[in-house]
Image (cartoon, rainbow, N blue to C red; front, side):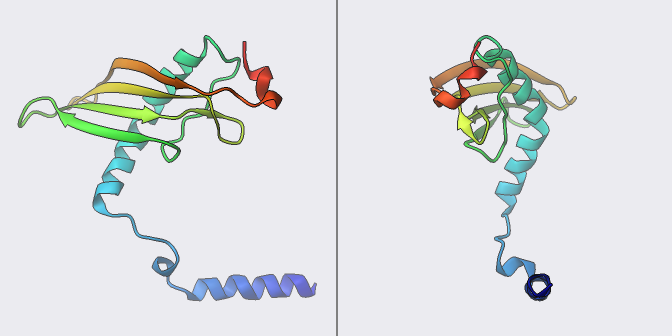
Length: 135
């Protein structure tokens, strides 16, 4: 009972501290990048699943915050069509990377997302206790 009271007391102290003092505020650029990756996550996951279906029994996980890099290029000036290239590091289990992949999408103003290119850049071997993931 005493432990519960101590935990409640400590928790209540955190409610008195303003949020920004212990969590960094994202800047506009990182927020925009996070938004783009969030919107593209279903497309990225689909492409990763398709590629790794040849070698893995279970699809790896894609998380935008884990090993992801992104570049955005406008196809022509004043045109709302973009080439978005995402370098992803899919993983299985507790973040055991299976590889590094680069996927390029064409994103248009109509909301269309088309995969232009998928390049597998690197393989990582899974640890022995996850060997059952391989086909």
